Image (cartoon, rainbow, N blue to C red; front, top):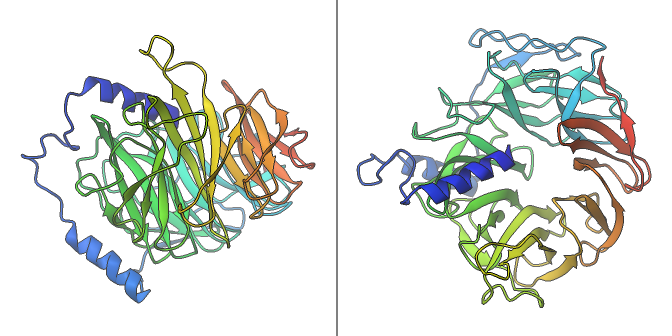
Amino acid sequence: MNRIRKLLYIVLILALGGCNLPGGSAAARPQPERSAGRNTFAAAQLSAQATVTQTPSVESSPEGSSQPSAEFAPPMPPFSAQSEVFLQQIHMLDALKGWGVGTQTDSSDHILFTEDGGQTWAERTPPEPASAETLRATAHFADARLAWVLYTLENAPPPMQDPIIWYTRNGGRSWQASQPLPLTGQEGWFDPEGFTFIDERTGWLLVHIDAGMSHDYSHLFATLDGGQTWERIADPYGVGLQSLHNTGLAFADNQYGWVSKDNLGVMQGAFYEATFDGGQTWETRFLPAPDDLDWFTEVSQCATSSPLFLQPDEIGLLIVRCFTLSQNDTTFGEGSLTYIYATPDRGENWHYSQLPSPVESLVFVTPDLGWAFGRNYFKTTDGGLSWEPLKSLNWDGQFSFVDAKLGWAVARNEDKIALVSTSNGALTWQIIVPVMK
């Protein structure tokens, strides 16, 4: 979905001749009410008190087969026992237990749980109403108890009604529905970038909702009560976040966070946006140029991605990938430069390492030990200050590790997908054929 959205975004940038906000002319369009939500969020941050709103609870059996509450239509039917399932996302918690998002042929996404290292999976799907169209899940799994799930239609059309977020505090055996997300009704599409949480009560959700000339119009929602209620604290009608493409979101605590950005060749240099007030306002921060690329004088197309904070030290890391202009100075060349930037002090000082090939994601199991994954992947034992090459792959993956040895990946190669695992720190991988209990 991210690749499709980015292509659409670039097409819109080339096609549109102005910078109008979603919904048409900014001068003619009534502005949505902003002050109440922002004041509520700020007051809740200061008092550390969040209003607890009663929301419907839906009980599930130990196998996760959900029963709908009275105010919801019949939910998606569970997958059949002993049937094969195709994992789209995996988040393991230890050697045996973990969450997954899975599908079967032409099915919507289901939320699943394993207790045997990914061999078999049980339903933990929220009672999301069944749909004639395919539903995709954006999920965040914190531990064996806590998870949040947002369902959207495939290809990200704007929702017909304000969407809800499902949350569980008992491993998916029952789910509660949040209050509806406060939308404006002027969304051109609705494509979640993802959640980030710093504890069981405080989290954020970034959603792409439209695009204009060199803008990625986005909503940022925040919760202070574990997902029961969400405030829209940033949107296209305010400042920050909207210029160029938003590629990722991370928070170090309830005040300080990053959104990584792709400059799409419009601006020089690599940059991110930082917030110091929980996401209400944002400032553009440029990274120092590496020795081999003066990106403030050389035209380059650079993107920051995979923002990550390592606890408890709060070391921050970003992937930076840059393309430079080809010799005829009309198109960006095929070659690219890839760096990993690390900061120990929230961007005051930076250290960077250049990698010989592109990477897509960062995965850490301790503040020192982690991997940078791409078709070629690398390992660090010093918190990202240096990286050693490990192996090459012929597939792309979404990775989950629980320690220095044990890891899993959803492996993709064109239209093929498989679940694989490693027991030797990503040196070799074995295929798992996951089935439903």
